[in-house]
Image (cartoon, rainbow, N blue to C red; front, side):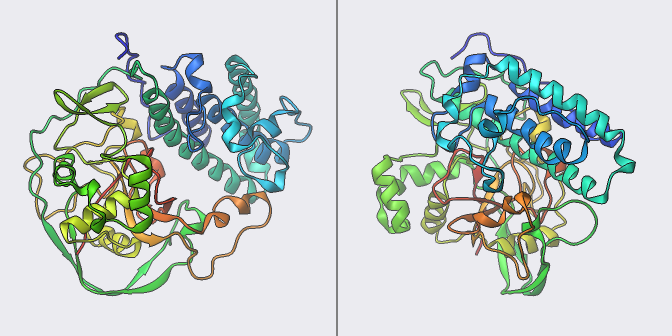
Length: 432
């Protein structure tokens, strides 16, 4: 473990006073997340899911340059003609690009050039924002998408940095351990009833949402119950110690194959030492906090745990219906702005009649495939590639995590990952 971890990065205000200041705050937050890193840390790509921090810094800048400056600023000169090839992510409409698995080979351009690139684009964006009243309505829509896009990459930065540092034999700390609530044991989980019937799900109203949230529609669900908090590390440890990872009866077939081929015996980042279970965090290797929510589990592990309990995971429709029923808000949740970068346990005196941790702390796996809502259609052009083409072979997660910017989350937000993914702050809430 590093003996000189960097201090906690200063959080950015969640209430900028203007659109320009909001743009500046979000752009600043991305840089702040990378400030504790060494230049060498920013080029590492241990697995295909994890992008180098330098690439994130450049890609988010390329987004502004490509979709706003080149489109709306007459005479704009791109910073470098090769950057469109280097830092395009997956937009086939915009030409060829570096393969996703090869982003870690980009030792050049150097990090300083990427920061210069960010400054260049930011200065031009501020000039463009000063002209926003003269620009067509589509500008404001793409601008908002750009802000949300960068916030998505801030969450990826936080989780990718964690994975990158975890692969070092030195187990270096990204930041000093922040002061957080210490709880010996979580209160027992309580079951909260949710009335069934016909409900409306999907986004409606004012404000931003992604296109995959649109198409508000009616669904029927039977009466069900939801646990009032996330599953804890202590509870998941019981599954481990009961031989859950060695008993095929609890696992879906693909999950069981993964357990055997990947030798899974615990959540990602857990390590069994002579002194007990530890886990790698943003502040190094620490004992597992038993009262905190279990995270970094795949859908297969979440489902196997539910099966071991004789219970199940909620569907995404049930999750959203419950979140509305219980009036879920971001208040009390743990988000990126807290600087904690770890989900927090609920207070020992938390009311058993309230549903806790619905927003923030950990993304919650649902037993729902990521499919289109009724009436969904892809937008024209490159931005139509943003969500629609991923609607196959993935599962929906709800609620956000301790790495999600607070202003980025809402009840209808549909995150999605393949069932085997574990590097995000993914957790478990049980239903019956």
